[in-house]
Length: 218
Image (cartoon, rainbow, N blue to C red; front, side, top):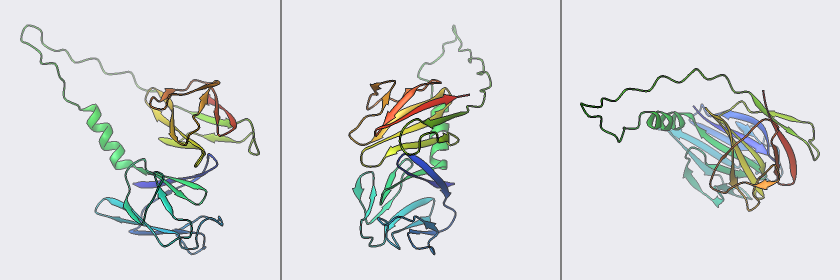
């Protein structure tokens, strides 16, 4: 089921599953998704779901609707697209596309062809994975002391337009990656690579958009 992960200033406020053919978004209380922010128009945008696709449409909003940094009038969304509405970041997650990509990766064809003299022996099955439980604890700023539990596949943190990063839950652990903005996230005082996600460890210090936080894994 497709869904939107809504965040502001690096803090996820909620997740909204998209279950209707048409979903409206705006500041007025009669919208399906209400975002109470003066930068958001009363009737800001709409999401249309048909034939397995989700399309976003700007409804003539004052400040516009942006997808991956570009203003849009109407556009089909892809898994991982970043939508900016006012000061809010909406991450589009398509669970079906994510599951399909995972299956394709797991069943990719082998490049080596076994010979009769050396038959290929399948590797033993991996040991069962223990559930991964982790959170981010804010250390500085007005929300110091607040904790964000990393329950979903992808959690976005940061400040839209300045610095946005993602923490992705994978089989080997939680991976930190740069998503948007000129300012790179810092891990234990060192800027991370723009292209390569990095594995987080318990106690790692993250700095993003001037906010200090710590990664805690249980």
